[in-house]
Length: 92
Image 1: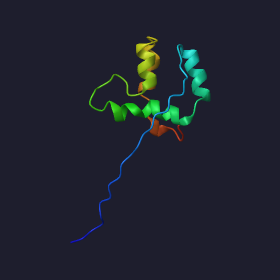
Image 2 (image 1 turned 30 degrees about the vertical axis):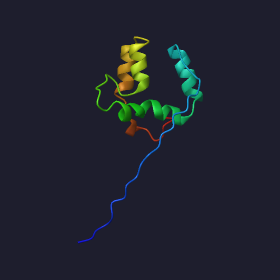
Image 3 (image 1 turned 135 degrees about the vertical axis):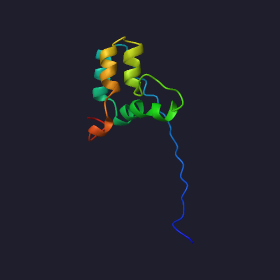
Image 4 (image 1 turned 120 degrees about the horizontal axis):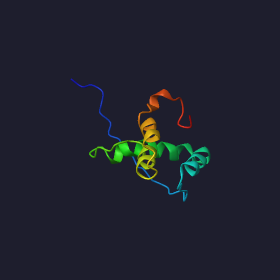
């Protein structure tokens, strides 16, 4: 019996450094307002791809940084439980 063929695909991810960095929560907010949606996407989803064998406290790079570097645990927790399926665009 011959069905539909199975197609193999691959992906290629090229990370581009932007040269932007935040040292405070205020700087992060400012940069989030002007950075590309792809940069936001990267920092929300890259941990699912790169850290799937390591259990981190938070999956989002933003929540991880806010917890570890700024010691703002309540905010990190709020970001950590966001369900991205609740948003209609990466910018929102």
